[in-house]
Image (tube, rainbow, N blue to C red; front, side, top):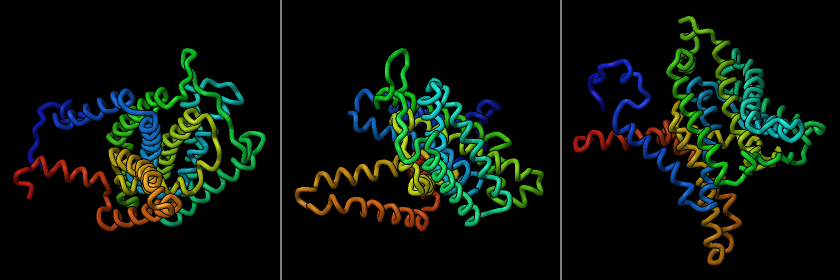
Length: 347
């Protein structure tokens, strides 16, 4: 652990990455993201796109749950709002796809703020039930508003183009997704350094004490719901344009639980934890499916068991993390860094 203050300027003290090793790790990660599509095949790029979109959605949920302490089970519904808004604007109104990446998140933020109103009076399980109601209400509207959303039928979205070149191929849309991952992570990190971020953390730690200190709980809780929904709406809009088809089955309650598992396993109240959790929960099903395909000849029943094994593993992993490491993969990463920082006196 560090001991003492070694910064001699305000610029050095306020930097996002204040140490050479931190800058080196960030540089290596950026280099990996830039080089990856040139050396990887189509399937790994497809998985990376999934991880990128999931990271944006997990960042939004982590702001609400990890930093503000407001539980939410409506992540799937807010993804649906962003996806359907972007899809409808593009397919039916002819709005350029890049503008929908701004309009859809803003509209999702307004919807999230409306459903965040009960947070002023509700906490814990009661707030979770309120957000679960938002999940069911929004999906019901999507599946029954046939004239706008298409109801239970798929909404086909025109593929995005740039200078006449279609971008819905995995390798081309990769740059848009990961460019926005970097943008959202940077804006999130800077937001948390402002008085808004400190207010969110104060509400999470003790809302009554925060109110006594002069923090307007209603304002900041609604703001947390709105900003969180903005990020989630952006992830939904990316799904619509990347897959070029929007169906309500992609945004069920299982998706909400999946995103909640991402931030629990990755680490609550951590930006890097959102990435770790998104990668873990995206790659785990892919690994299991590949194992099922590899051993389907020697173990014929394994391919049929994979969905059940996957569900059991999800539940088991969440329970183990809650018991053994509540701070998730982010804490494990911190322990690894501290070990090498203090070696050979790591005890």
